[in-house]
Amino acid sequence: MSKYVNVTKMSITLDNSVANELNALSKELNKKKSHVIENALMLYFDMLDEKIADKRLREVEEGTVNTISAEEVWKELGI
Image 1 (cartoon, rainbow, N blue to C red):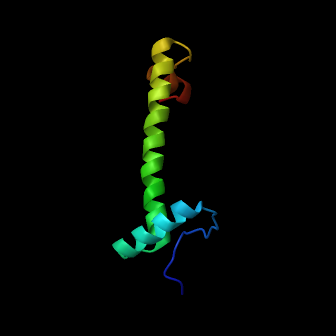
Image 2: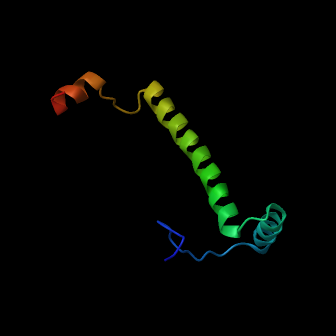
């Protein structure tokens, strides 16, 4: 039985400088390259989430998007 659960195997292509840095970091940290990549992506996704949230807040403040109040949603859902 495999120790890996809920994982997807992927093949990626990296610029040589990025690949070299990944190799050096994974050796220094004694971590698998996939672990370093996964952690880096999670940090990057957190940053993107913040950018998207800021963009949406700006759109609400500028009035360029329509919002629905919580009360309207609750009423529609019968809550």
